[in-house]
Amino acid sequence: MAATPAHDLTVTEVRLTPILVADPPLLNTQGVHQPYTPRLIVEVVTGGGVTGVGETYGDTAYLDLARPLADALPGHRVTDLNALPLLAARVCGDSPDATGPGAVDAAGLRGVRTADKLRRSVVSAVEVACLDAWGKTAGLPVHALLGGKVRDRVDYSAYLFYRWAAHPQGAGEADDWGAALGPDGVVAQARRLADTYGFGSFKLKGGVFPPDEEIAAVRALAAAFPGKPLRLDPNGAWSVATSLRVAAALGDTLEYLEDPASGTGPMAEIAAALRAGSAAPLPLATNMCVTTFEEIPEAFTREAVQVVLCDHHYWGGLRATCELAALCTTFGVGLSMHSNTHLGISLAAMTHAAAVVPRLDHACDTHYPWQTEDVLTERLVFRDGALTVGDAPGLGVTLDRDRLAALHRRWQGDDGALRSRDDAAAMRRADPTWRVPAVPRW
Ligand SMILES: O=C([O-])C(=O)C[C@H](O)[C@@H](O)C(=O)[O-]
Ligand SMILES: [Mg+2]
Image (cartoon, rainbow, N blue to C red; front, side, top):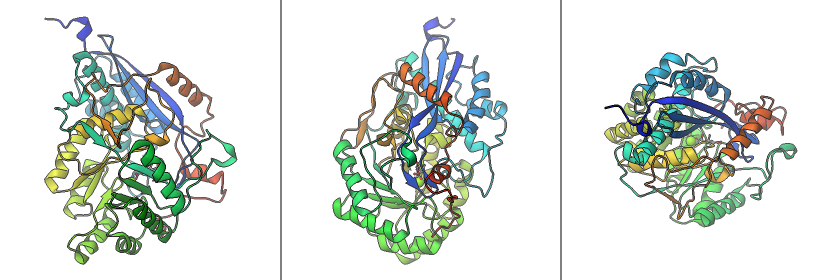
C-alpha cells in the first residue's frame, strides 16, 4: 500500500542556511574567538511536509561539502541513514581545505584536518535533520529512533575560559562577564556558571598561560568547589615533560587531564609514565588524537587515552557516536562529550545521543552558556547542571525562522573575514605579530 502523504518520508528539499552567531572573546592556545562564529543550519523537508533540523560547523570548507550533498539528497528517504555516509563520499568530493597528516585544524582545535573529518561533520547535521524529520513524522523522540534512552537527564559541565572583557576595537556583542585572566577571574566565572545553571563539574580551557599559572587556577577552583570534578584542557600545547609535571602537580585534583600534548605518540608516552608512577594514574582524555575510527586502533592498543570525548559532529552523527561508545566499552575506555560553539539544535542532538549510550562516565561539555544567540523559539534550560531528556517528537526543538533569517543576513553582510573561524586572525587584531604557536608551546 502506498504511504499516505503525511507519512511520506522521501526527502523533497534540503535547505542550507549559513549564519554568524555572536561569540565572546574566549582565549585558547591558538588565539581568541572571533566576535562572530559561523554555523550551518540544515533543514530536510519530506514529502509529508515535515521539516527536520540539524546544525554543524559553518566554515566555508564545510559549506562547500554540504552543497553537493544537499543537491543529491532529494529522492532518498530520511530513514536511509546507513547509506548517507556512502552518498556523501560519492558526491562531496575532496576538500581543498583538508590539510592532511601533520597539520592541525585552525577552526576548533580538533586535531588534524582531513577531508574525511570535514565530510563527517556535514553528514552529522544531515543525519540529525533526517532523524528529526523521521521522529516528527512517527511521533517519536530521536532517542527512541536510536534504541531508547537509558537516562532521563544528562549532566553537563561548566566550560571555563580565560577571556577578555571585550573583543579588540569593541567588535561584536558586549556582555557583562568581565575579564578572567587569573585564578580569581576563573573562580568568579565558575561561581556564576554554577549559580546560574547548577553545573557541578568544571573544565578549564588551558594552553593560554604558562602551565604554572593554569595549575594555580585549577588549585583555586579546587579550593572554591571542594570535591567537584575538575578538568584542564590545553589542547595539546605541552611537551611530554611539561605534561608530566602538571600531572604530578594536579594528579589528586583533576578528574582527567585533556590533551596535554599533541598526537597519539606523546599521549601514549605520558600515559605510560603515569601508569609506571601510580597505581591510580590520572586519566588522559582526548578530543584531538582520537577523532575518527581510523585513529582508534593505535590509541587504544597503546593505552594512550583513558577517556574519549565523543562529538557527533566529528564522528558523523548520533548513530556513529553510539558505535564509538560501544568501542570504548569494549576497550575499557571511558566516555565523555566534547562541545564546540554549538547552538540549541546541536545541544538537543547531543542530549539525545548522551541519553542512549549505556555508559556515559562524565558530565558532557557545553559551550551553550557562551552562545547567547540561538535559532530556536525557546532556549534549552539547564536545571541542576543537567538537561531533561524530553519525549517530544524528533529533537523536541522549534526553529525560529526570524532569528535564522537575521543571523543569515549577518553572514551575508560579512566580507568573508568571519566566514571561517580563525582564532589566530582574531588575536592579530590585538597583537599584529601573533602566529599560531608551534607545539609544544611549553
Ligand atoms: O578541546 C576542546 O574542548 C575544544 O577544542 C573546544 C573548543 O574548540 C574550544 O577549545 C574553543 O572553542 O576555544
Ligand atoms: Mg579538548
